[in-house]
Image 1 (cartoon, rainbow, N blue to C red):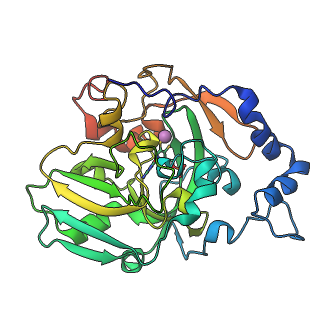
Image 2: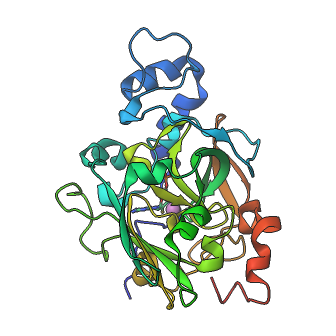
Image 3: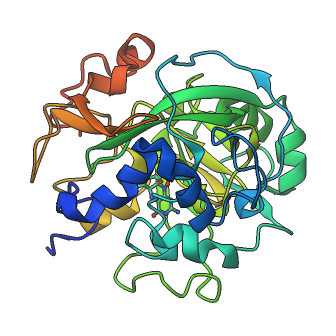
Length: 321
Ligand SMILES: Nc1nc2c(c(=O)[nH]1)N[C@H]1C(S)=C(S)[C@@H](COP(=O)(O)O)O[C@H]1N2
Ligand SMILES: [Mo]
């Protein structure tokens, strides 16, 4: 089987390539210049700390403060919206921010299919307004060994699953992202599009699992997975499917795009595990926050073990990776 070297491949990027962007963030004197170049700060704006409102078409989102939030330093919004994995819009980290403006997020509907009382199609705005949107500041750990701290806005996926009324026979839920070649001409050919992911039902119902519509108090930037994505803070980032158009309830473990691409490395569970590095060590990660990016130890379940370890009791997590 082809082992992909480019993606999810452990940031084998020489530091010479990443330093310029990092440097903009650490040197506050350069920060405004960077923001201006990135097109996210209007000319003449006041404080350098000001959030780039309305960048990438993001709109203010009404939120209530949520639970489970970390107080760790947050990743600046410019970083979280310009350093992305969204392969449908190109592979290098800076491509989704450049290309995802072609993503049309309205009209948008979400299909509910499979083992549910009533299959149906839901309008995205009805979905967003279904429950109060909470702000949840979560750690976000990519399998490539970088991490961020992001204030996501959404509500527990469990609320929506209860609305869907899955049948008792439904043991898993699959998430399917939009795939439209016209909007996504940069998507590499050699993946089984559309992007598809999935969870065991108890993982999907866990209160940490966030059905996400925004970040930083604004609707999601397209490159972050507008208009709706999943966020799973205890799993490698690729479990958190973006721009979802379908929830499919099933009694069989869903196949996932990354598992199909490289089954030895990317399993169904994909819980953050410092002991399970395949082509490189996962013991440490590069934290991208408001300071200069720095290395920190990786935590089992990305630090959410108190909340989620019981989901996997009795399982060998080196085998069930
Ligand atoms: N549809 C889709 N969802 C996706 C991806 C993708 O390429 N396509 N990349 C995943 C990966 S590898 C990560 S780390 C996160 C990145 O989310 P962010 O760019 O909002 O930080 O999205 C995940 N969801
Ligand atoms: Mo990732």
